[in-house]
Amino acid sequence: MGKVILDGNNLTIEDVVNVCRNNYNVELSQDAINNVLKSREVVEKYVNDEKVVYGITTGFGKFSDVVISKDEAKTLQRNLIVSHSCGVGEPLEEEIVRGVMLLRANALAKGYSGIRLETLNTLIEMINKGVHPVIPEKGSLGSSGDLAPLSHMVLVMLGEGEAFYNGTRLSGKEAMDLAGIQTIELTSKEGLALINGTQVMTAIGALTIYDAMNLSKMADIIAGLTVEGLYGIVTAFDENVHQVRPHQGQINTARNLLRVLQNSNMTTEQGEVRVQDAYVLRCLPQIHGASKDAIEYVRQKVEIEINSATDNPLIFRDADKVISGGNFHGQPMALSFDFLGIALAELANVSERRLERLVNPALSELPAFLVEKGGLNSGFMIVQYSAASLVSENKVLAHPASVDSIPSSANQEDHVSMGTIAARKARSILDNTRKVLSMELLGACQAIDLRGNKGLGKGTSIAYELVRNDVAKLEDDKIMYKEINKCESLLKSNIIVEKVEECVGKLY
Image (cartoon, rainbow, N blue to C red; front, side, top):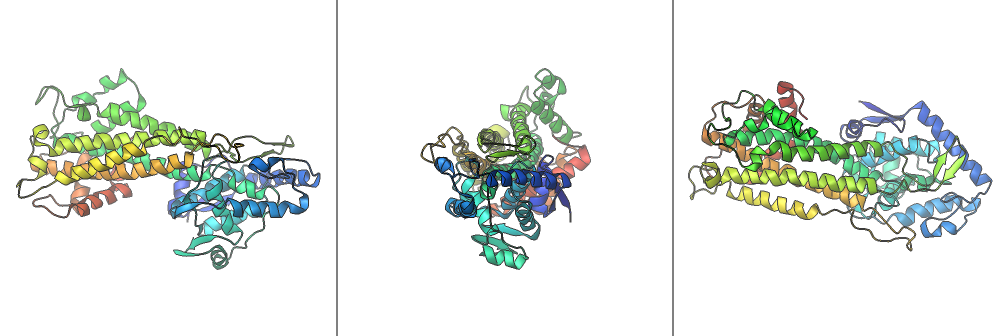
């Protein structure tokens, strides 16, 4: 089994995916251990000196002016967790919960939170032994961090709440006992250190951005198949066009298309069949490329966030300072995930319009709805309906969460990010977009068969064969959702991208 070493500074999105989906183990680096111990020493010193410091010797939020005695420290921390466990809705998926625990552990490993090493080790042991707290998906404002959902994570550390273990939903205490993990009692600063951060929104967003990067490559491959199904003009993808408007995503998309369409006998040059194509083919590099640039921007922001200290207060061990700030505020992630949702929605928008060109005989010169005995058969008629429904749903979901705010904690926390809602929306849009692209993939392969496959491109031929291994050409009407689901499974597995890249080189 693989392993990821946490030092608080060098976690990658690929590491997150490996822990969340491939069950890699997690360990602390020696530097991280040293930094955690030093940070804890500062907290102990402040507690012993009975200094008034937010979250260590005071209450929380509006109660920050209430001083808490040393004797009440453990009660304060436990009360924080149980009172803040107010999440509602369905549990987050297991892979997201693993991401939440991993990102929180990495933030604590930086050594700015003042947690005890044994408490952090308990969290890491839960990751490694597969104890996954039941974390409701709703209830976070995204400032002060993901308080409610992270509290549900901590409940299990205390032997409270609920967790999934080996696929069974149990009480937190039962799950910890079965895994052989000792439950803990929190002390000064620890409850706040565990819940005051952006790890829920960022875990959702990190997995979504990883999938979005792969899906944007898949969108190019599918679009390439549609170009072939419509005898599209590849001249518009010429490198010269894109070098004079050098947005990197645009350049990369044009390059991807030319690579996957190399040697195709089902594309045309400018003026050969028609002078120019409609926008959804001719402007593919500009449309897909803009989404790629947005995805790249979000990737950079996520990689910063997964290696950041996001709680409050922060312990600066070398300067012997404890500073109350606002690193828990989710605004950088909220704006990023709203942007990601919009970028993904556009991939679906243009995919559905390409599907419309495939099924509409006035636009394609193909049999109506991609079936030879039309009238008796409806063919792909309602496939396009379903795609249109998903695209319209995405338009609703793409409304930015980050433009909203609502005061909380008696107006002490008077601007919140809604970043967790933004992340969840982006993930929903990703799922819808994958489904729309699956429908286009199915339609493009059908169009190629109806044209007569005269030889596809170097990359598109691989995608076509993978589809046809699972899905036959439509001769007469059949239950279509099953065919759509087969294509979606191919997209989820990422096998098409992997096989195409083996042949044509890395796509971007």
